[in-house]
Image (cartoon, rainbow, N blue to C red; front, side, top):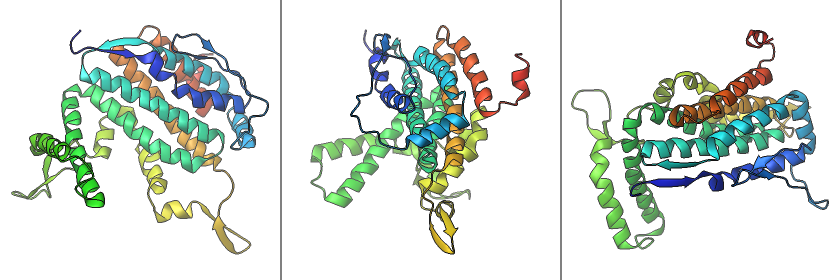
Length: 323
Protein backbone atom coordinates (compact mmCIF):
# COMPACT_ATOMS: atom_id res chain seq x y z
CA UNK A 1 0.00 0.00 0.00
CA UNK A 2 1.67 3.21 -1.14
CA UNK A 3 2.16 5.74 1.65
CA UNK A 4 1.21 3.25 4.34
CA UNK A 5 3.45 2.39 7.24
CA UNK A 6 2.94 -0.91 8.99
CA UNK A 7 4.24 -0.31 12.49
CA UNK A 8 5.52 -3.51 14.04
CA UNK A 9 4.89 -2.19 17.48
CA UNK A 10 5.56 -5.36 19.39
CA UNK A 11 9.15 -5.60 18.13
CA UNK A 12 9.87 -1.94 18.80
CA UNK A 13 8.42 -1.85 22.31
CA UNK A 14 10.29 -4.87 23.65
CA UNK A 15 13.49 -3.01 24.37
CA UNK A 16 11.95 -0.46 26.70
CA UNK A 17 10.96 -3.11 29.20
CA UNK A 18 14.50 -4.43 29.68
CA UNK A 19 15.30 -1.70 32.20
CA UNK A 20 12.01 -2.44 33.89
CA UNK A 21 12.81 -6.14 34.21
CA UNK A 22 16.19 -5.37 35.77
CA UNK A 23 14.61 -3.00 38.25
CA UNK A 24 11.96 -5.52 39.17
CA UNK A 25 14.58 -8.16 39.87
CA UNK A 26 16.68 -5.82 41.96
CA UNK A 27 13.89 -5.27 44.43
CA UNK A 28 12.89 -8.93 44.23
CA UNK A 29 9.52 -8.79 42.57
CA UNK A 30 8.26 -11.10 39.91
CA UNK A 31 6.78 -9.36 36.90
CA UNK A 32 5.57 -10.66 33.60
CA UNK A 33 6.13 -8.53 30.54
CA UNK A 34 5.15 -9.32 26.98
CA UNK A 35 7.49 -10.14 24.18
CA UNK A 36 6.94 -9.22 20.55
CA UNK A 37 4.39 -12.07 20.31
CA UNK A 38 2.66 -10.99 23.54
CA UNK A 39 3.80 -14.14 25.32
CA UNK A 40 4.96 -14.05 28.95
CA UNK A 41 8.63 -13.23 29.37
CA UNK A 42 10.32 -14.73 32.40
CA UNK A 43 13.96 -14.16 33.22
CA UNK A 44 16.13 -15.11 36.15
CA UNK A 45 19.11 -13.40 37.71
CA UNK A 46 22.38 -15.40 37.64
CA UNK A 47 23.83 -16.05 41.06
CA UNK A 48 27.15 -14.47 40.12
CA UNK A 49 25.62 -11.25 38.69
CA UNK A 50 27.08 -8.07 40.14
CA UNK A 51 24.33 -5.74 41.36
CA UNK A 52 24.98 -2.07 40.70
CA UNK A 53 23.17 0.79 42.37
CA UNK A 54 21.74 0.84 45.88
CA UNK A 55 19.47 -2.08 46.79
CA UNK A 56 18.82 -0.51 50.20
CA UNK A 57 17.31 2.49 48.44
CA UNK A 58 15.03 0.15 46.51
CA UNK A 59 13.86 -1.27 49.84
CA UNK A 60 13.21 2.24 51.14
CA UNK A 61 11.23 2.97 47.98
CA UNK A 62 9.03 -0.04 48.68
CA UNK A 63 8.46 1.20 52.20
CA UNK A 64 7.46 4.67 50.99
CA UNK A 65 5.19 3.27 48.30
CA UNK A 66 3.78 -0.09 49.41
CA UNK A 67 1.17 -0.06 46.61
CA UNK A 68 3.66 0.53 43.82
CA UNK A 69 4.10 -3.08 42.70
CA UNK A 70 0.34 -3.59 42.46
CA UNK A 71 -0.05 -0.29 40.63
CA UNK A 72 2.70 -1.14 38.15
CA UNK A 73 0.97 -4.38 37.25
CA UNK A 74 -2.13 -2.42 36.24
CA UNK A 75 -0.14 0.30 34.46
CA UNK A 76 1.81 -2.38 32.62
CA UNK A 77 -1.44 -3.82 31.31
CA UNK A 78 -2.54 -0.44 29.96
CA UNK A 79 0.87 0.18 28.36
CA UNK A 80 0.74 -3.20 26.66
CA UNK A 81 -2.69 -2.42 25.23
CA UNK A 82 -1.53 0.95 23.94
CA UNK A 83 1.84 0.04 22.46
CA UNK A 84 2.06 -3.71 21.78
CA UNK A 85 0.00 -3.91 18.63
CA UNK A 86 0.24 -3.71 14.84
CA UNK A 87 -1.16 -0.51 13.35
CA UNK A 88 -1.40 0.64 9.73
CA UNK A 89 -0.81 4.40 9.66
CA UNK A 90 -1.08 6.73 6.66
CA UNK A 91 -1.30 10.01 8.53
CA UNK A 92 1.82 11.80 9.82
CA UNK A 93 -0.06 12.98 12.90
CA UNK A 94 -0.91 9.38 13.81
CA UNK A 95 2.72 8.34 13.54
CA UNK A 96 3.92 11.24 15.68
CA UNK A 97 1.28 10.58 18.31
CA UNK A 98 2.21 6.92 18.55
CA UNK A 99 5.98 7.33 18.59
CA UNK A 100 6.01 10.34 20.89
CA UNK A 101 3.89 8.29 23.27
CA UNK A 102 6.38 5.47 22.91
CA UNK A 103 9.24 7.85 23.81
CA UNK A 104 7.29 9.01 26.86
CA UNK A 105 7.16 5.38 27.95
CA UNK A 106 10.93 5.08 27.49
CA UNK A 107 11.47 8.20 29.59
CA UNK A 108 9.13 6.93 32.29
CA UNK A 109 11.03 3.67 32.66
CA UNK A 110 14.36 5.53 32.90
CA UNK A 111 12.96 7.86 35.57
CA UNK A 112 11.49 4.92 37.46
CA UNK A 113 14.83 3.12 37.51
CA UNK A 114 16.81 6.03 38.97
CA UNK A 115 14.04 6.77 41.47
CA UNK A 116 14.22 3.21 42.77
CA UNK A 117 17.85 3.92 43.65
CA UNK A 118 17.28 7.30 45.23
CA UNK A 119 18.74 9.46 42.46
CA UNK A 120 16.23 12.28 42.74
CA UNK A 121 18.29 14.89 40.89
CA UNK A 122 18.88 12.50 38.00
CA UNK A 123 15.14 11.82 37.86
CA UNK A 124 14.42 15.55 37.84
CA UNK A 125 16.67 16.08 34.82
CA UNK A 126 14.93 13.26 32.96
CA UNK A 127 11.49 14.60 33.86
CA UNK A 128 12.26 17.80 31.97
CA UNK A 129 12.63 15.81 28.73
CA UNK A 130 9.58 13.65 29.39
CA UNK A 131 7.41 16.65 30.19
CA UNK A 132 8.39 18.42 26.98
CA UNK A 133 7.66 15.30 24.94
CA UNK A 134 4.29 14.85 26.64
CA UNK A 135 3.27 18.48 26.12
CA UNK A 136 4.29 18.33 22.45
CA UNK A 137 2.44 15.03 22.06
CA UNK A 138 -0.75 16.43 23.51
CA UNK A 139 -0.48 19.70 21.58
CA UNK A 140 0.06 18.03 18.20
CA UNK A 141 -2.74 15.59 18.90
CA UNK A 142 -5.09 18.50 19.61
CA UNK A 143 -3.73 20.59 16.70
CA UNK A 144 -2.95 18.09 13.90
CA UNK A 145 -2.80 20.88 11.31
CA UNK A 146 0.49 21.98 12.91
CA UNK A 147 2.20 18.62 12.38
CA UNK A 148 3.40 19.77 8.95
CA UNK A 149 5.05 22.81 10.55
CA UNK A 150 6.67 20.65 13.21
CA UNK A 151 8.15 18.35 10.57
CA UNK A 152 9.29 21.22 8.34
CA UNK A 153 11.35 22.74 11.13
CA UNK A 154 13.57 19.69 11.02
CA UNK A 155 15.10 21.15 7.86
CA UNK A 156 16.02 24.31 9.76
CA UNK A 157 17.49 22.31 12.63
CA UNK A 158 19.56 20.22 10.25
CA UNK A 159 20.93 23.36 8.60
CA UNK A 160 21.85 24.79 12.00
CA UNK A 161 23.63 21.60 12.97
CA UNK A 162 25.60 21.56 9.73
CA UNK A 163 26.73 25.15 10.38
CA UNK A 164 27.97 24.18 13.85
CA UNK A 165 29.77 21.14 12.46
CA UNK A 166 31.55 23.26 9.86
CA UNK A 167 32.47 25.88 12.46
CA UNK A 168 33.97 23.18 14.68
CA UNK A 169 35.58 20.75 12.24
CA UNK A 170 35.92 22.66 8.98
CA UNK A 171 33.99 22.62 5.71
CA UNK A 172 35.29 19.18 4.73
CA UNK A 173 33.50 17.43 7.57
CA UNK A 174 30.55 16.58 5.27
CA UNK A 175 30.29 15.95 1.52
CA UNK A 176 29.74 19.25 -0.32
CA UNK A 177 26.65 17.94 -2.08
CA UNK A 178 25.12 16.97 1.26
CA UNK A 179 25.62 20.48 2.60
CA UNK A 180 24.16 22.08 -0.53
CA UNK A 181 21.10 19.84 -0.46
CA UNK A 182 20.42 20.40 3.26
CA UNK A 183 20.69 24.16 2.89
CA UNK A 184 18.46 24.14 -0.16
CA UNK A 185 15.76 22.30 1.78
CA UNK A 186 16.10 24.67 4.73
CA UNK A 187 15.82 27.72 2.49
CA UNK A 188 12.49 26.42 1.18
CA UNK A 189 10.88 26.70 4.62
CA UNK A 190 12.88 29.32 6.53
CA UNK A 191 10.46 32.14 5.78
CA UNK A 192 7.76 30.22 7.64
CA UNK A 193 9.80 30.43 10.84
CA UNK A 194 10.76 34.09 10.83
CA UNK A 195 9.53 36.13 13.81
CA UNK A 196 9.97 39.81 14.78
CA UNK A 197 12.81 40.59 17.20
CA UNK A 198 10.38 42.68 19.26
CA UNK A 199 6.73 43.77 19.28
CA UNK A 200 7.30 47.21 17.79
CA UNK A 201 5.75 47.87 14.36
CA UNK A 202 8.24 47.35 11.55
CA UNK A 203 10.66 45.37 13.74
CA UNK A 204 13.37 43.33 12.08
CA UNK A 205 12.79 39.62 11.60
CA UNK A 206 14.88 36.76 12.91
CA UNK A 207 14.79 32.99 12.60
CA UNK A 208 12.78 31.48 15.43
CA UNK A 209 14.58 29.14 17.82
CA UNK A 210 11.74 26.62 17.76
CA UNK A 211 9.11 25.28 15.40
CA UNK A 212 6.09 26.98 16.99
CA UNK A 213 5.40 30.66 17.41
CA UNK A 214 4.26 29.72 20.91
CA UNK A 215 6.98 29.48 23.53
CA UNK A 216 6.98 26.22 25.47
CA UNK A 217 5.22 27.60 28.55
CA UNK A 218 2.44 29.07 26.41
CA UNK A 219 2.10 25.74 24.59
CA UNK A 220 1.89 23.85 27.89
CA UNK A 221 -0.94 26.11 29.03
CA UNK A 222 -2.91 25.09 25.93
CA UNK A 223 -2.74 21.39 26.80
CA UNK A 224 -5.21 21.44 29.67
CA UNK A 225 -4.21 19.65 32.85
CA UNK A 226 -0.63 19.19 31.64
CA UNK A 227 -0.18 22.93 31.94
CA UNK A 228 -0.62 22.69 35.71
CA UNK A 229 2.57 20.57 35.84
CA UNK A 230 4.73 23.38 34.47
CA UNK A 231 6.48 23.91 37.83
CA UNK A 232 7.43 20.29 38.71
CA UNK A 233 7.82 19.31 35.06
CA UNK A 234 9.73 22.33 33.75
CA UNK A 235 10.83 24.99 36.23
CA UNK A 236 12.08 22.73 39.05
CA UNK A 237 14.06 20.51 36.64
CA UNK A 238 15.59 23.62 35.07
CA UNK A 239 17.50 24.17 38.31
CA UNK A 240 19.39 20.93 37.72
CA UNK A 241 19.30 20.51 33.94
CA UNK A 242 21.24 23.79 33.58
CA UNK A 243 23.99 25.21 35.80
CA UNK A 244 22.16 27.45 38.28
CA UNK A 245 23.00 28.70 41.75
CA UNK A 246 19.69 27.35 43.04
CA UNK A 247 20.47 23.88 41.72
CA UNK A 248 23.92 23.99 43.30
CA UNK A 249 22.74 25.11 46.74
CA UNK A 250 20.01 22.47 46.78
CA UNK A 251 22.75 19.84 46.72
CA UNK A 252 25.00 21.40 49.37
CA UNK A 253 25.03 20.96 53.13
CA UNK A 254 26.98 22.30 56.09
CA UNK A 255 28.20 19.72 58.62
CA UNK A 256 30.34 20.75 61.59
CA UNK A 257 30.92 24.13 60.01
CA UNK A 258 32.16 22.65 56.73
CA UNK A 259 30.33 22.92 53.42
CA UNK A 260 30.16 19.92 51.13
CA UNK A 261 28.02 18.11 48.58
CA UNK A 262 25.23 16.00 50.03
CA UNK A 263 26.24 12.37 49.73
CA UNK A 264 22.95 10.73 50.61
CA UNK A 265 20.06 9.95 48.28
CA UNK A 266 17.35 12.47 47.41
CA UNK A 267 14.07 10.60 48.04
CA UNK A 268 11.97 13.78 48.21
CA UNK A 269 13.13 14.95 44.79
CA UNK A 270 12.79 11.39 43.48
CA UNK A 271 9.19 11.12 44.64
CA UNK A 272 8.29 14.56 43.28
CA UNK A 273 9.83 13.67 39.93
CA UNK A 274 8.20 10.25 39.79
CA UNK A 275 4.78 11.66 40.58
CA UNK A 276 5.19 14.13 37.71
CA UNK A 277 6.39 11.37 35.38
CA UNK A 278 3.49 9.15 36.46
CA UNK A 279 1.11 11.97 35.60
CA UNK A 280 2.77 12.42 32.21
CA UNK A 281 2.62 8.76 31.23
CA UNK A 282 -1.09 8.66 32.06
CA UNK A 283 -1.62 11.71 29.86
CA UNK A 284 0.34 10.05 27.06
CA UNK A 285 -1.88 6.98 27.41
CA UNK A 286 -4.95 9.19 27.33
CA UNK A 287 -3.82 10.59 23.98
CA UNK A 288 -3.32 7.06 22.58
CA UNK A 289 -6.84 6.19 23.68
CA UNK A 290 -8.35 9.28 22.10
CA UNK A 291 -6.41 8.92 18.86
CA UNK A 292 -6.67 5.23 18.16
CA UNK A 293 -9.80 4.07 20.02
CA UNK A 294 -7.96 1.01 21.39
CA UNK A 295 -10.23 -1.72 22.68
CA UNK A 296 -10.03 -2.21 26.44
CA UNK A 297 -7.79 0.80 27.06
CA UNK A 298 -10.52 2.97 28.57
CA UNK A 299 -11.28 0.40 31.26
CA UNK A 300 -7.60 -0.20 31.96
CA UNK A 301 -6.96 3.52 32.30
CA UNK A 302 -9.75 3.99 34.80
CA UNK A 303 -7.91 1.53 37.02
CA UNK A 304 -4.65 3.42 36.43
CA UNK A 305 -6.21 6.77 37.35
CA UNK A 306 -7.52 5.33 40.59
CA UNK A 307 -4.12 3.78 41.29
CA UNK A 308 -2.48 7.17 40.83
CA UNK A 309 -4.66 8.59 43.59
CA UNK A 310 -4.04 5.56 45.81
CA UNK A 311 -0.28 5.93 45.52
CA UNK A 312 0.12 9.70 45.73
CA UNK A 313 -2.97 10.82 47.66
CA UNK A 314 -4.25 7.85 49.67
CA UNK A 315 -6.47 10.06 51.88
CA UNK A 316 -8.26 11.62 48.91
CA UNK A 317 -12.06 11.70 49.16
CA UNK A 318 -12.11 10.44 45.58
CA UNK A 319 -11.24 6.99 46.89
CA UNK A 320 -14.08 6.97 49.39
CA UNK A 321 -16.64 7.15 46.59
CA UNK A 322 -15.47 3.68 45.46
CA UNK A 323 -15.95 2.08 48.86
